[in-house]
Each structure stands twice: as structure tokens, then as C-alpha cells.
Amino acid sequence: MVFLDWLWHRYSLTINKKEYMRTPHIKFKAIIIAGFFSIIVASAALYIDNSYEKLSEDVIKTNMELCEVLATQLKTESQSIIDSLHHAEYFSEGYKGYFNSNEADKLLSEVSERIFRNFDGLEGGFFIKGLEEFQGYSYPTSPPPIPVYGPPPRSYNFIKEQVLQSINNDSLIVQLHKFDPAIFPLVTRPIEAHEETIGAIWVRTHIEKELPELTLVDILNITAVVSLLGFILAVTISIQLRNRIEKIRGDLERLEYDPDHRLSILPGIFGFISKSVNKMVDALQSEHNKREVLERELHQKDKMASLGKLIAGVAHEVKTPLAIIKTRIQIWQKKISSINEKDLGESFSNESMQMVINEINRLSNLVNRLLIFSKPVNEHFKATNVNQIILTLLDLYKNKLFLDNIEINLKLEESLPDINVDPDKIEQVIINLLTNSVESITSDGVINIQTNRNNGYMVVTISDNGMGIPVNVQKNVLDPFFTTKDKGTGLGLSIAYEIVKAHRGKIEFSSNESVGSEFRIFLPIKNSD
Image (cartoon, rainbow, N blue to C red; front, side, top):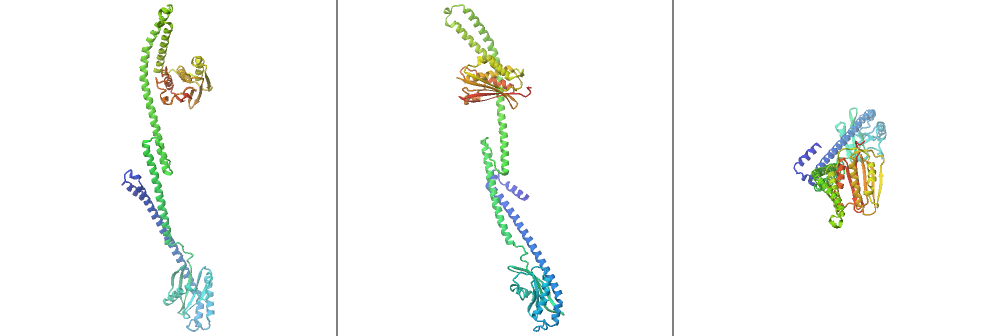
């Protein structure tokens, strides 16, 4: 595998980054893998064949040694009978002397049968040179059919040829004979009587059932099939890998122009890669979003700081002249009250004077609100019960804020703790939100006020069933001087937003046009106890 990795690395260096993803590269690796797989399988086949061959050699050697030992034993134990037959001139050509053929065969068979009886599948006997025939044949453990007078017909010529060779050479011969399906080792050795070679002993056993049945051809055939299957498997895997890599590459290319796109989840290691990339992209996207929010907040803060300084200066400059004008008009109003209105005309009537005073009051309120906006919180916080602020506010301003056609529903959590806030500013926030709700209701309506705790925050929720806020302007409702009302200043919600932000809280809202709006004020409870 080290060589494979090296070869793979060397090949990879010859192609550029884009070519790396293409099909030939994958196929080349598949061919390498298949080739190494074939080599491994072929090596295993040769190893198995060598093992089988060694096993066969061991079986053959063991049985040859056994036949050789039994041939020696048969010669030793039959020597006395051979000597007796020789003394009676039984082995002389054309003369059988005292013993006839059946008696001699019986004597010799008893010896060979006694020796072979303890060994399965062994057979053997004697070949008499002068008589040119087999005698003393014994087959005590050989399977049927059993020949009557000597070796089986198919083996006869093999055995006779080796027996004659052993007699002529006066030597022990051990050979392995094969003819389908028989395989047997054959041991022949000459026998003498009074220093005269009168024949030979033969012993054999069939070993075809003991030898392994697989041949090298069979093993190579199996190897070829396994190698082919391995190659097909390697190509299939390479195609799957290519498709998955192409899928990841396509997702990455799409991700370049579509940041919201994510990689498809694939099986195996590619699934781990996809999940890791998606997790990384999500983290980057989240960080990017946070950075954008922070940049907007910093920009808004800088804008508000500059605007606050401008508003504070303008408000202070305008407030004094307005007070002087209002005082003068009130003096004029008192003086002309004793003069006949008919002589003064409509331009100097009490009604016209009062209208001027009302407009001056409206300007004064605007200036006061601008001053609040320029410096929303005095940082003098104290432990305050928000439920009590709401109840006091409703008690003091109910007749002023709400009309008879509006129903107020309260759902205040009694176990809320006191929190450190500027109570006057929080009261201002609630008044601004309630004022918006009242102004959004055109006929009979309902305003719900609720308090509760949520994840370390105390939450004040104010909802109504008024006209709601159009979708196209919802992103601007917290901006200063933005309003959809004919006589609105656009400072109510922006002042509330600045106050809550100064308390390290937040404002959230949801609205459906013609259904209603819901504003939620989040004030931190931490370090408030």
C-alpha cells in the first residue's frame, strides 16, 4: 500500500487541480487497485497451489514409505515358505514338485493377508518368475470388486512391468503410477531362495482420495474469476467515488454564488467531508451575519450620536424662544379678553390665540421628545417592579390614553423579580407602545399586556388587533423620524428602542397588516436581584 500511495502521488503531480477531479484519474486509480488486487489473489493462488503440492508430496512420501516397510516385512515373514517351496523345486520351470499351484498360493496369501489386514486399502502379493504368474495375492481391506487370481486387470500391466524390472535389476523399485482416476505408489523388491532370484514381492495402495482435489488450473480459474470480480468492484467503486466527488465539486461551485446553498449529505467519508464543510460554511455565514449586524449597529450608533448632538443643540436653542413666544401670547390673550371681539376681528379672537398656544405646546412637546431622544437614559437605575409601573400607568393615564371602544386585557406574572432600570424611561417606553396600539385601532379593539420571564429576561408583551404595519416598511419602523401617520413625528418607537437598548435589552415585533401587531420588550434580569 505504501508503493500504491507513492504511485498515486506521483501521478497526481502530473495533472492540475481541475484535472484531478476528472474521470481518467479515477479510472487510473481503479486500474492500479485492480492490478494490485489481482497480484495479491494470484500470489494467494500460487501459495495455495504450493501448499497443495507439498501436501500431495507428503501423502505420496508417507504411503511409499509404508509400502516399502510392508514389502520388507512381507519378504521377511514369507522367507521360510519361499525356502520350503524352493527346496521342493516348486519354482523350477515346468515342474511344481510336491506343492501344487493352489496350495502354494494359499500359503503365500495367508502371510500377505496377515500383514495387510491392519492397513486400509493396501494390497499386494508375489510374482513367480519361473511360472510367469502372480500368487499369494491379498486384499483384506480393499473395496470390492475383488479380483480372484491377482492384480486388477487395469493395473496388471503396470505391476508386472515394474516387477520384471525389479527382478532383472535385482533392486528395490518405488514408483508412483497414475491413470485416471487411479493414483497409487507401487513398491517391488526381488525375493531369493538359496541365493537365487525366484521372483518379486509387490505392495501398493490407492491414494487418489487422500490427495487434494484442486489443481493449479482450478485455482487459476478461481483466481481469474475473483480478479475479474475485484476489477468490476474497483471500477464500480471508482465510478461512485467520481460521482460523489463531482457532486461535491458542483456544490462547491454553486456555493460560490449562492451562500445559502449547502453540500449534499453523502455516505461514508464524503458524508463526513460534506457535514464538515456545511458546518464551516454555517459558522462563516453566522459570523458574517453577526458582523453585518454589528456594523449596522455601530453605524446606527454613530449616526444616532451625531444626530443626538445636533438635536440637543437645536432643541435647547428652540426651547427658550418658544417659551418666550408662549408667554407673550398668553399676556396678549389676557389683555384682549376685555376688548370686544367684534372690534378686534377674527384674527385676534380667543380661539385664534388658543390655536397658536396649542401649536406652541405641540412644538414644546416635540422639543422635549427630541431631548429625550438625544439622551434617553440617565443611568440612575434602581430596583423597580415593572408590573407596578404598568398598573400605575394604566391607573393614571387610562382616561387620557384609551377610548371607550378599546378593551384592555392584563396577564401579569406575579412572581416577577424587581429589576434595575430607570423607571421613568421604562414608563416612557410602555406609553409610546400603548400610544401606537391605540392609534392603530380604528374601531372596537383589544390591547393585551402581558409580563413573564424567558431565558434570563423579563418580557413585556403589548399586542393589539389594529391595522398592523405594512410589510414594506417594517424594517424602518425603529428608525428616527420615520412615520406613516399624517401628524406623527416618527420618534415614539425610536425613543423606545434607544431606551431599551441603553438598558442592555432588546425590542422585537411581529405584525400582519389588517390583523394587528405585537411588540416584545426584553429587559435583562441578571444582576437585578
